[in-house]
Amino acid sequence: MSERSIPRGSYAVLGLGRSGQAVCRFLAKRLGSEVERIAAYDEADTSELRERARDLEGLGVSCQLGADAVDAADVAVVSPGIRPDSALMRSALDRCGEALGEIELAYTASDSPWVAITGTNGKTTTTALIGHLLDTAAVPCEVVGNIGRPAVSVVGDIGPATVVVAEVSSFQLKMTLRFHPRVAVLLNITPDHIDYHGSFEAYAADKARIFAQMGHGDVAVIDVDDAGSAGYAASVAASGVRVVRVSRESRPAGGAYVRDGVLVVETDGGVVELIGRDELKIRGEHNVSNALAAAAAALAAGADAASVREGLRTFEPLAHRLEPVGVVDGVEYFNDSKATNPDSVLKALTAFDDRPVVLLLGGRNKGSSFASLAAAASARVRAVVAFGEARSEILAAFAGLEGCPVREAQNMAEAVYLARSLAQPGDAVLLSPGCASFDEFDGYEHRGETFRSLVGALGVRR
Image (cartoon, rainbow, N blue to C red; front, top):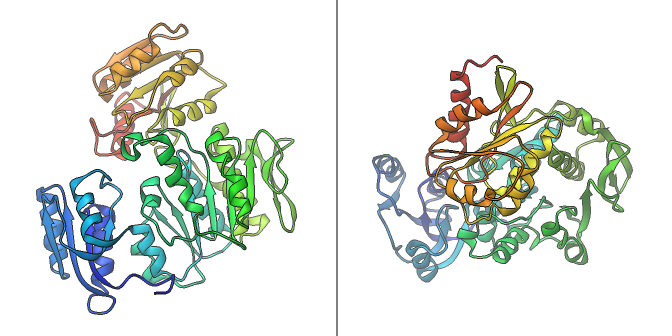
């Protein structure tokens, strides 16, 4: 089998969410050629899943809901939501010849060059920004992964001239074998998803799999201000990959950095000066790093410098990522619902060095400690409102710290009304929860949309 062809044989698809459905439809088009048969499994059994299963069975996919085991198959395609310690996953590893993820399957089916972006925080913004920079430069591209369409839904419609720009998570990278991006971006590695990976070391190792197949002629963009990602720069360079080190704090040779307030990228063709950091519309010091990484990746993928400058100037903040949602009584409200771990909250706070903040923290903890966040935030914000399932852990982390009052709310709605009572004109109310959303919401998007609606109900003036 060549590197860029899908494995032949029978398939077991684990999970019937967005990714799993896309995989089933992709494989169904190949029934009778590369694919012998397709069986799909989901641990849940709901009316919505039954409707999906009926649709897929019409395409030749057999579906089993409420499943805890799979039948033998040549290949298992595992959705990111399937936990590695689940009975379904253990069964697939025992009964299938190999297990891979949707992003790996899409890669092997495509002829396109790939730009892949990972990191604990910032990957969605950086992925979208790279796509925007390539679009501005008229470089054909498709943005896929956790944003945009699932990769397997795209690769059949594009040719080798189109660049695939993919946001890839640690869950997806864990299930890669042959995945070989030509440009790979590692933004940072801080504790997250420990409940899934089992340890920080295992989580970091899965992130670093983005570089596993890279070699001479490839480009790795690595943020060296972050201790978790910086350690990989030397070993990746030793494998023959050109490494572009990103830093706001230094000027690494051949890197991307800030010089006299201007974003700069050193390329093989010379030093490229881009735009002033204050020209970026995306807020926060972390977004300066994200912009440097995106610019370096876009230049490596074929964008010209003039277009990168224009794209950096025109890129707008994404929904749920430091998104302004309105002003009430002189207080501006920001939706950063995508911040699902404490480190992302610390990064978000750098966007508000010019004014006091009332911070909304809470949701479902993913195994993170709130101690460092509490120590930093207590000296930085006007007040904290802790809500949701993790509120007692957050209150405990702030206990004994001086600097700001901490209030408790049962849920998001109560948290918003408490924040209004605590904020003063000129302040910012920031929803940056530092937790997953699944105690109260379907996902971070649902949480952010609810926040936006609650702010609107306060009498928002946009």
